Structures are given as C-alpha cells and as structure tokens.
Image (cartoon, rainbow, N blue to C red; front, side, top):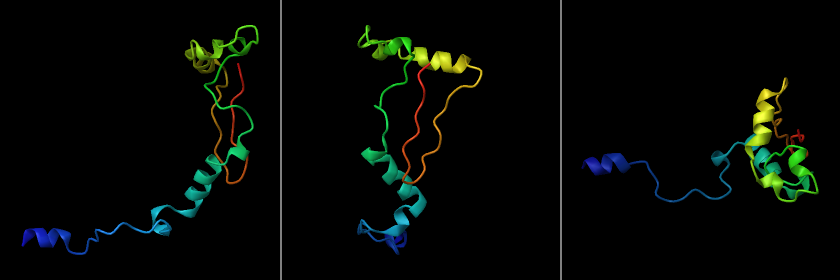
Length: 96
C-alpha cells in the first residue's frame, strides 16, 4: 500500500527528446553555440605564455601548464573568459 502512494502520479516513461521543459531556450541557444565548430576562432588548448608558444620549443605549451595561470593571478588585470553569446564567436584568452 505504501509503495503505491510513492509511485502514484510518477510516469516511468522517458520524456520525448523534444520536451521543452528539459532546458530553457536561452540555455539551449548557448549550448548550441558552444557545440558549433564555426564559432571557434583559435585552436582550443590550455592557456600558455608567449614563451611556451615559441616555435623553437615545440611541445613546451603542454609542459608546466600552471605558468600561464600563475602569471594571470599576478597580473594587474587578470584575464577571464567572457560570456558565451548566442550565435557569436566563442571568447578567448590572450597569451601572456
């Protein structure tokens, strides 16, 4: 009897994929922008310092990945990614 009270009114069927109650439209627009490769202007990688990106030191950007973050924390105006906006290119960080 208790079990019936707990399950009354609860459907075991999965909601349809196009159920609008699963995500609001503004959030769906942002998620779609994040997944749109045409909105990516630069290679996606861990932030790196200018020294780590020097062509005479290939692979250095993947070493000591904390360097960019350490410099960013000490910077007078630390960088942070801006908000993602529907249909616009994705934000990026500058090398330091």
